[in-house]
Amino acid sequence: MSRTVQIREIDDDTYAALRKLASDAGLSVSELLRREAEKFARRPAMNDWLEQTRTRPSTISRSAILETLDDLRGDWPAADH
Image (cartoon, rainbow, N blue to C red; front, side, top):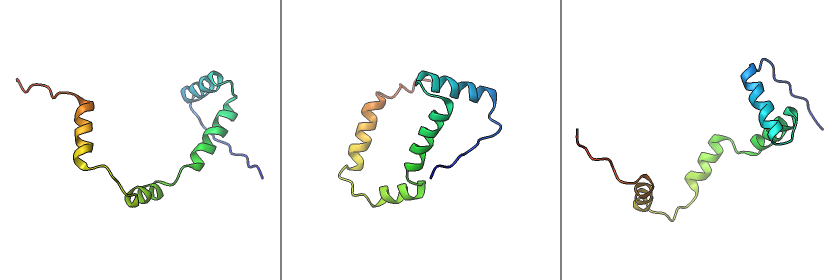
């Protein structure tokens, strides 16, 4: 069974951005929001997701994570002040 949802008092800038996103995707604003609502509804609640990640076994060591982050960030700037 389908339901209708109405959102009131969307400011002009927000609606213009939604209209552009919809147009770029070849959709109406309603269809864009329907698709986004469906994606949002499939996501787990934050507490459920956190519980899943806490109980998931990890094979990556803390040192490997830190090393990767250091590689991604690059060299630290010199402390010449």
